[in-house]
Amino acid sequence: MQTYLDTIDRADRELSEEDMALAHALQINGRASFREIADALGVSDQTAARRWSRLRSAGRLRVLGLTDPQRLGDSPWVVRVRCTPDAAASIGKAMARRTDTSWVNVSSGGTELSCSVRTRGAGIEESLLLQKLPRTPQVLDVSAHCLLHVFFGQDLSTINKRGPLTAAQVAALTPPPAPDRASSADAAVRLDEGDRHLLDLLARDGRAAPAELAAATGLSRSTVRRRISELRTAGVLYFDVEYHPDVLQWNFRATLWLEIDPSRLAEAGAAIAAHPEVSFAAAVTGTSNLYASIDVANAQLFYRYLTESVAALPGLRHTVTVPIHRTIKGPGPYLPVRA
Image 1 (cartoon, rainbow, N blue to C red):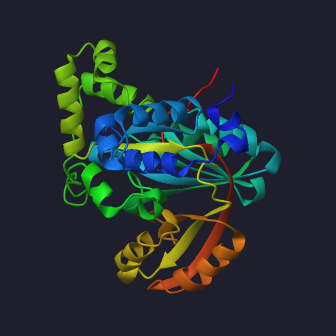
Image 2: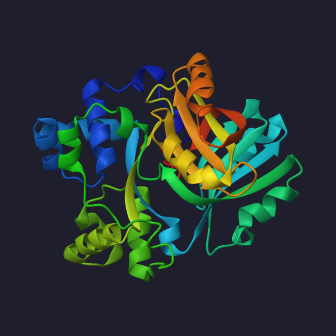
């Protein structure tokens, strides 16, 4: 089975300036209408719709409706799997096919896999994946780290920091903020079957039309619109843009596992979240208690980033760097499939 990640020529992956502006707009508000996008970008709504259709059909990007696991009482984990190099591809693809995983990456010369895993409830023992992996012959070691607090990422990406839109354009597209996740951590939102069906459809296509969602769920269009609005307001639902791994042309990607003095963890997390090179940063369990994903143009810039920005983080005790070689699966629970 081929996914869209395997079917695009490199020459077709590059985004023009106009395409980047549209991608930036969708990252800010994945459900914005073409009229709202067009008004912000200074183009016609037909032009905005045509650009989106071309990018989506070519597999360069798609919008996904995703849920905050902590708002639903679930637990997000970062899982690291050391394996024999000959098994990395097959194990990675098997991990990517699971709907409880996202961000499946091949790292460290093909000797390590990493992914995000979502479990129902607080315990990692709920994960069937974590029960199976240690029994796989080619797996040498498995470690799981619970995400405690996200400093940057989830519904944001590096395009929010380095994208082409002006502050005024960003403000025009920005939806009302959801509740602070820390203040609402103890109040898990309950979903009914209608909500779960709706969210499952949005996880496959975050820009699906209300009429399409209504037909699939049996809800009315007005109910679909209302529930999407309510779930966003409650901080349950957010929209993210999944890009082809090469579409932003980052030539060097890596993860950082940093050991920070616990008394300065919040300060260090806030500092690294502001770095333009950082696409995701979170506090995690384990000796390395600050985890970050890094996107830069080349290894020389990564060295500069390590020796300047990372070295200056408050409370830094130890650093581990893990280069990412290939992304098998992005932020959503489902792999996009092309015929």
